[in-house]
Length: 491
Image 1 (spheres, helix red, strand yellow):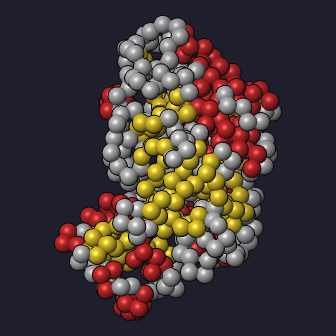
Image 2 (image 1 turned 120 degrees about the vertical axis):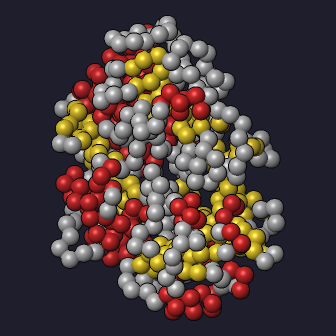
Image 3 (image 1 turned 180 degrees about the horizontal axis):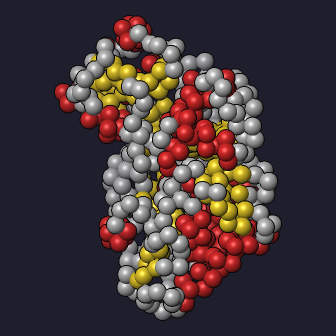
């Protein structure tokens, strides 16, 4: 099915699922598909009518967004499904922040779900939907992480999301027997693969609580309890899990059949370490900024680091476009690299406000909608796309442009180095931060870098960390690393 109507897709899936099957499991409690169907339908009726028990305002036919200020779990999933069924865009926001302020910052006047369960909500005033949100195709709003510039609120396309979810269900052969681990919060589009993607397939969402993501050991213990068949992870979190799996006597993920990796570049060295401890699951590397509608490129990796990974590759390719998408590689302004552009009718609708940054919407020469991602890429010898850096991670040093990812890539080729990130601080100083799976002599690492890098690329310092800092979404926190540039070092 490739129905473009998100409401129909989700409603049909709810009705076709085994009513007694758990739709979502959290903290030992299960919400069945029958319960998710009835609760989301009742809530959708209240949202459509503009009235509910508790304070509310407005009238029937309201179409402005609904902010979902709830953590990952059954309440948030029910609220989002209800919004879709009511024809109202959902806007997941972090409950740790002031939800009303978050809506004002995004330029949205909306209603807000809060509290332990959906059903308690209050109006922020009827108002008129902001320009763009009134578009009937607007299915959701998401605020980007800001890792590549200022945070922006993206207007997501409901039909595009429906087509993506249907593709994911069919491509991954998801069924009601699958259990998808939910490691991401609802305000991160990464979670759509885990939650809405499970519902579309009649599968079970197994919630991994935030506390279980603090360490690799805690994550492995929780996953061993939940026994997922599908696991989606950022590379930074996968590195933690691999470390825990490599310990003597560690539990096995005996039901896992699919590992989906996305959100950051996926080092080949990390793939090799994963294969050493978990050779059975199929690994897929996925790519897509928030503006692209979840995912636009996909690569299924073989049982070994196979021929489609070039010998000199540092990261696993992100593959080829999924149906309905195409790619262009455009030369950067200086012609030194090529920028990855996504061409598709299924991109997000745009931003709520005009914003700057390296990720922008435009049109190609044929007039098709295009997203300039700000990511630098190349084609492998087999025609796969490999991400090699970012436009905004190019710095000028001693009059020469230097790619910080290239500096990190040289370190990742050194045995024992698991993750590496180079940042540039004041005075054009480059510091290379890295983590290891085995003892690494920093002096020996520096010697190898001397052989592999041009003089202007050489880091001024190298610093080993016990763990890479990550932000609230689990991505490597480059701002935190930049703040460490002047801190104590190990050389």
